[in-house]
Length: 178
Image (cartoon, rainbow, N blue to C red; front, side):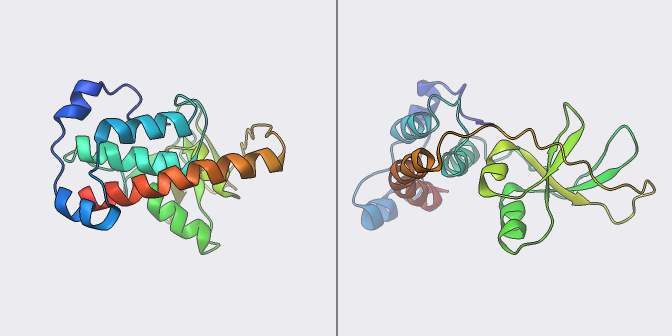
């Protein structure tokens, strides 16, 4: 779920930030990768809770640490039953969800998929896809939505507001640095 949870602080300290002057001009402070990682860690309750903004910030920080790592976007993934998925980036999946287009979260370990029906669903998956148009196997995709039982909506709303404030600034700083 979080790609930077096993990153050492030494790796973060060694990260050279491009455009630091621009970050300071726009935000009033320098981007500190260690502090950014700490904000992500806190917002995700020590990398145990799914938080969409924290995951986006985590993804950006990971891309800064590993700029050469390629995404699997566009890859065709075939399940054991022969059903094929065209994989999408998380950003593309989010765009499709917002545009009310069909997109699925893919879990390769259990060979299941779930229709993305909420922003919380986006946070539960690392891989996303749409049905590949050249499928030989015809079936309706399974809805394996192992939804976590959420605490009250009020509690979630309050937690999201608290995290969003800290993560918004972090996300802006990371976007500028990338």
